[in-house]
Each structure stands twice: as structure tokens, then as C-alpha cells.
Amino acid sequence: MSEQCAMKQIPVIKHVRAFTLRGGGADYHDQADGHWIDDHIATPMSKYPAYRQSRRSFGINVLGTLVVEVEDSAGNVGFAVTTGGEPAAFIVEHHLARFVEGARVCDIERIWDQMYHGTLFYGRKGLVLNAISGVDLALWDLLGKVRQEPVYQLLGGAVRDELQFYATGARPDLAREMGFIGGKMPLHHGPAEGEDGLQKNLALLASMRERVGPDFWLMVDCWMSLDLNYAIRLAQAAQQYGLKWIEEALPPDDYWGYAALRQQLPPGMLCTTGEHEATRWGFRMLLEMGCCDIIQPDVGWCGGITELLKISALADAHQALVIPHGSSVYSYHFVATRHNSPFAEFLMMAPQADQVVPMFSPQLLHEPVPENGRMPVSRLDRPGFGVELNPACALHRPYLHTPGG
Ligand SMILES: [Mg+2]
Image 1: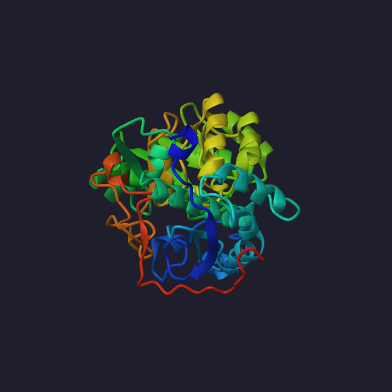
Image 2: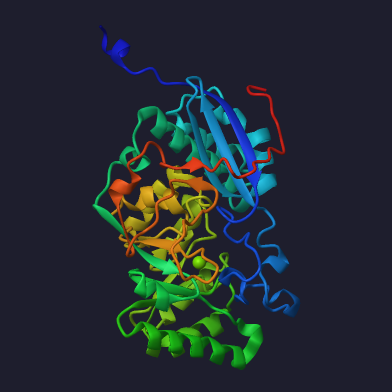
């Protein structure tokens, strides 16, 4: 038998389908009333009093979840969830599918390159990269299922036996009791709320430091809401509360502001950002301009695993850590394989941040969660990303295309 004949036959991708889904999950902001994630959190829209109390009021959940399915000629189906909803479903069905259908399931690098360059005239970031990420993650899931290996093994294998997590939510004090290595809470008041708001922000940090004790990591997430002057004042005043990092203090296009902020942070306090950044070129700006110590790409927004590998290598050469934003299993399979990703984020999606629930619940089955702030890598030992779509969730397919057409 020749060497070529001994090679495993690689299936061809036959169908790409895009669905939308409402209510929590990958679009984790799509929650009901009373959830900590929508409780007067400071945003760039906080300067308008009408949009200050709720992020849903300005449309943070307007897109909903995107589900991408890819099916090969052998009947294997890979899938992924991210945000982007109906407009991303249009892009997947009517634009990206042409680069996927007819390709072999291993042609991930070429497909990514074609999806990115084929959308360059209207893409580059944001919604289009959500859609590209969704397709890319579905392709990695499919490849893992075809090869019967977890994605982290396809990426080169784990560099440690377990993952450790910090928790994001309103209750770092409870996160500490649950075994997490740190807690990150949202900032509630932006610059438009003046000196009074600044003092309220500092009072909450003071009281949380009191509750978690001196050694627990305590961080604050500003969700792009501040200006440079306010961010510096907040960071300097918060130094006494042992703030480990200040996250996404400024709008993502203000690379110059981030570079200045990082220079003026108190000693030991880290500057982090990047959850709304995308591709190697966006992160190159953050890294080469010295904007941050930790980059936080969202795996479902930055371009998927294929692009994250490039972003991560770039970060490593700049001595920056890569701690993906949220992203559930898509983060875990990546973080396990990288030395410069020594821990992971866990979003506390229980409405009061008082218990550990699967991050993308209810959309995924078999979604692993940390126990005592940790997760053995062996929990990821299922083909692909190791999760399934919950059949109880009602999928809607708003656009249909003819495969190959
Ligand atoms: Mg954040």
C-alpha cells in the first residue's frame, strides 16, 4: 500500500447553517430583569441619564446568539455559539458559506484567510469578526469530531494538568468562598456622575477589599466607560485597596489613551483590555503601543481559535499574558495549551453571582464548570469542544442559501 493510500480520507464540508437564539448563553447580556450584569454598570452611554441604569436600554442584547453548524460529507456536524444574531446569520449564509462548502474539514487556515479578506471591504472588526469567529470555532469543533480528539490536543496539547479561574461578577467576596483565585467586579459610576460617583466607586472597592481580606485578587472592569483623567484618578485612589488590574478603562479605539494610562498606573497595578478588539492587527496596535499588560480577546469575537493562535504568539513576544474574555469552552481549550495564559476568566451568570452555573447556560450540554475555582484538563476530553447544543433551545434560521450557490 502506498503512503498516500494509507492516509485517512478527509471529509469535505457540505453544508453551513446559521441560526439565532435568544435568552442568555453566548449573548450573556440577554438576561431578564434583576441580574447583576445589568445593574447600573458604567458604560460609554452612561453620560445619557436615560441609558444609565440598564445596558439593555441602549441595546446591549439587541443581537442575540449566533449558532453556526458545519456538516461534512460523512455526516459529522461541528457547531459553535457566539454573538451576532440575525445580521451575523446573514453574513454566514450569504457570504462566508461559499468559502467553507466544498473545502476539506482540515482547510481551516485557508478558509479563515478567505473569510477575512473576502469581507475586508466592510469587515475588519465587530459583527463581521463575530461571524467569522463563529464559523472558525464550528470548523475546529468539526475537525475534532472527525479526528475524535479534543480541540486542545489539536492545538498542540496541554501545558498543565488543570485550569485555575478568577470570577467576574458582583460578589468577589462569594467568589473567594467558592475557591476562585480572584474576583472582578463591574464599575457602577462613570465620569458623568461626577465626584459623588467616584466616591461611590471607591467606597464599593473599599468595602469589597474589607470583605475579601488582604491577599485575594480584586479587579475592576470599566467596560470602556472612562476618560483618561478619570481612569488615572480612580486607579491612584484605588491603590490603597490593592487593585490588581483596571480593565477596559477607555474606548477600544483610544490606543493612545491606553498607552498613557499604563504609564501612569500605580506600581504593581496592571492595565488590561482587548475584549472588544479583533485580529492580529488590532492586537498588534495594543501590544506595540504598550497599551496593556494582559490582553483579553474574546474567542468568539477576535477571529476564533485560528486567529487567537496568532494573537497569542504576538503577545508572548511582547511579554503580555493572554487571558481570554469569557468564552467558556472556547477559552478553556485554548488556555490549557499556552504558557502565557496561566489562568482563565469565569463569568458568574447566576443572577446574584452567588453560585457557579455554566457560562453559556442554557444553550450547551456538557459545558464544564470550575469546582473550587479549578478544572482538570481531563474535563475537556471529548471530541471537538466537547459540548452539544441543548435541543430544548428553539433555533431560528432566518436566512437560507443553496449550498454551492
Ligand atoms: Mg471586561
